[in-house]
Length: 426
Ligand code: AHG
Ligand code: MN
Ligand code: MN
Image (cartoon, rainbow, N blue to C red; front, side, top):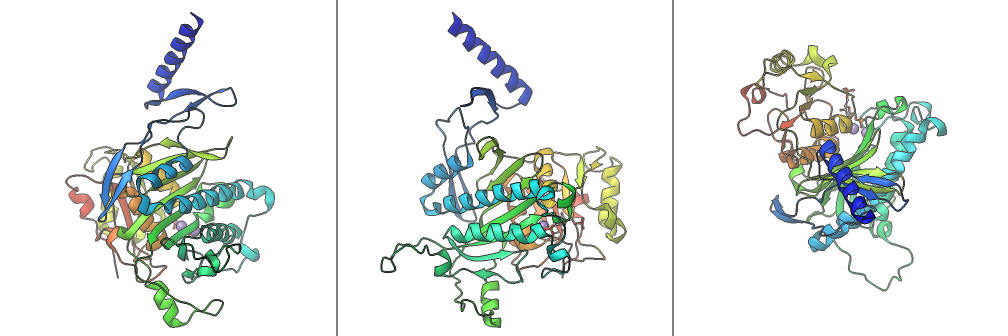
């Protein structure tokens, strides 16, 4: 009898919770004995064709009731389902380690003194931006993690003037006898913004890390280790820069009330949350899709005077409830792209950093902010445009090229007010 009662109790709780959470959920008796809600359901199975590549979604016929589906487990299954992309498993493992490290560095920065400007000020990156201490440290953390994955050929970062070529020695573990040639798999190109929204970090406002992964394709650059890059070498490395539609993976980590890891491999968007009790990212937001309609707009109104008339009129219309949906929108903007886009993916609405009279190409960098985030937005059923072009189609002309960004849910018929918006583009 007791067993039946226990079963009914578990079902009732499970049922009530499922109702409350709105997703299939289970009460999970964690290994620590306390009941732990694993708000997960297995992501959709199947496959997708993205940029001419077929990506098979992993299947999860069984789940561990103690851990849920972890990012580690997700990537093991993904590698099994996509042998030709198996190396993404170790690349994502490296990135998740870097994200956990950065999350701790950010959380503890007020106690460890990792606040304020690099070198007390005056350290300026190639974009002319004052670097925070954490800009530099997080760049090293991510660069090392990717380098030690042994899978990278080239890294491009917001905090690096030029792309960094990693030659065999960088990827070479010193213990491997030189005369044994282990079949090296593909080499990949990683692009990243190690700390997005860093101007917010000393105030405890959410920040993030953005990353994108390209396969190297046929372009390889041979550079003299340790010597300054020649113009030809810079040119060659720069030519490894590809449009967003060549991405094979992209994602972000969000350092906020929780640490989130959200990414796409070209077949949907999966969201994980760091379980600090065991250090694992657990699947909590399977198959993220932008809500069909939102009522939040997210852009910096401090630039209103510099916007073009179309954007000004558009924002005024949605503020007054005179836009397509007839709903009056509210404003939410934290100035960290990762946080603003994450909220947009979950709550819906519009995120934009438009070109304006001050910055005709806006502020966001194509390679390691706009393109990776656009891949996610499109995979979540959204559109990401400059106002004139689909961001994923733009071939970078330089590592730090900026583009205007506008994202929202894709609709069968783009409303006139939206497509009417024009952006400046040089
Ligand atoms: P980063 O800190 O990597 O330079 O990025 C900051 C970006 C982006 O995160 C955010 O959307 C935008 O800058 C905010 O710019 P404004 O402060 O001009 O609104
Ligand atoms: Mn950024
Ligand atoms: Mn940054």
